[in-house]
Every structure is written in C-alpha cells, then in structure tokens.
Image (cartoon, rainbow, N blue to C red):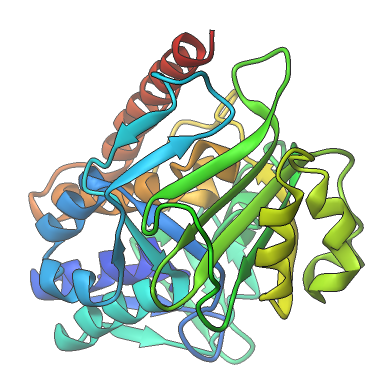
Length: 342
C-alpha cells in the first residue's frame, strides 16, 4: 500500500500509474477538486515520461497547444531562434484534467478535500482532521510549501529566488503582428546568463498566454494572488521598455493577472531519502519558473518512483538517483545558456 500526499501533477500521475499496475494507492489532497493555476510548457522528454506512465498522448494533445519554436528577441540575430523539441503549452487546469481522467480510469483512490494536518516522518503516521493513517511508504508530492518537508527537513525551507512572476491570459484573441504559436521572449540582459527581466508570450487563435519575470524584492504575502491588470501595468511595462506598444496591446486584452514570488528549494544539505517518508517534485527540489523545468522534473520523479515500486526496488534509492540527475541536468542547462548568451 502506498499513500501519496498531494494531488497535483506528480501525485495524480503517480497514483494513476500505480493503480494501473495493481498497486494499492491512496492520495490525500487538501483542495476540494483538481487544482487551478496559470500555464506551463512541457517538452518531449516530459511527454515521453507521461506516456511511459500510461497517459494517452492523444489525450495530452487534446488538452494542449503545440509550440513549433521559440524566439529570444534579446539575443543577437542567428542565435535568437530555436526549434521545438516536442514542446506543448498547457493551461494547468487542462493538464490536470488529462491526468485526472487517466487516474480515474485506473480507479486510483484520490481523496479531495482531505488535508493532512500532521506527520510523523519516523513512523509514517499521518493525521487528517478526523483520521490517523499509517503506511509503510509515504510519497510527499505536496508542493513547494510541503508540510512533509517541514517535518522531515525543517532546515530546508523554500527560499525566494530573486524574481516575482506575473501570469496572464487574454479571454479572447488579440490582434498581434508577430508570428503565432511561437513562444516569444523579450527582456533585458544583465551581467549573468539569464535576463534580469523577461516578458514572454504566445498567441494562438484563441488567446494570448503571457508572463513576466522581474528581478526585485519579494512581494508581501497579502499581494500574492489575482489582481486587476491595471494595478501592475506600469511595472509590467518595465520588463522591456523597448516594446511598449506590444505589451500594452496584450495588457489591454487581459482582465486579471496572477502574481507570486518565484521560490526554490535547495538540494544542498538535503537529507538522504529513506522510508517511510520520501519527498518528490517541488516538495523536494522546487526551482524558479525561469528554469522552465519544474513540471518536467516532477513527472520524471513520478516515473522513477513508479518503476522502483513496481519492480521491488528501493523508492528511496530511486529518488537519491533522481537528485543526482537533476543536479547534473541543471548544471548542463546553465552551461548551455551561458554559451548562447555570451
């Protein structure tokens, strides 16, 4: 029997895959229904992992938009365009809908509106408001503010990653002169390989999906969440002062925005994974959205854990190996970005 804390991307797809492999599994999710959120991009590796877990690629395609390429307008001509490697754009609600359909078809037991209120990581005992739960294997996929990590590794909190992140989506098409379906990136380069501010967008026949990341002090907790676009318009325009007309056109078509602090969870000094409680996804190694890797890493965690559980191997060893892979891949990505922007 496996108990999963958190019914987000990793928790839902892992539960569905385990149930499909006839492994008894229960998920406890504090939200009353599959979660909401902004949008994200998954690459070909993430889709391959989802397919290996049993998710229908056709279903994923129905819930997403293909991205044929990327254009980085802040880089010199000749180095400012790349082709897609199986990338697709998802509204988070649509991705979770596809994963929830998969999990439901396997009869995975996902219990929404069941928050875990306390955890004993040494015994594997969980508490809800009404129930005590004990299991030999607990998988904590409860996000960047993981209650499990707070109990297991209180020395490893989520830390501000230096940027605020603003997401918006127009409720209808907006006339833009730029190439459709391509993900465009504007911004201002600083001394390092990553822009100090970024404005990115993709426009389809249905909507414009856009975001901005701004290097600045963190916003207050009370400011996190949804706001009228007009409240932050001048701040968003500062992301790239060379394209005011483009940004203003997109903002004029956007009613509300979502704003948050980018945060990460360092693997430095992380406790070696060991049962009964094992962290995965953002609960273990959240990374700033600027890296565009968080969802893929969570999905690949789910695949590694599924393979370990269903073949009688150690899930703890699988996550230890995942940490090594993640660190190597992030370092390699940093080197690539540094070469491109040099």
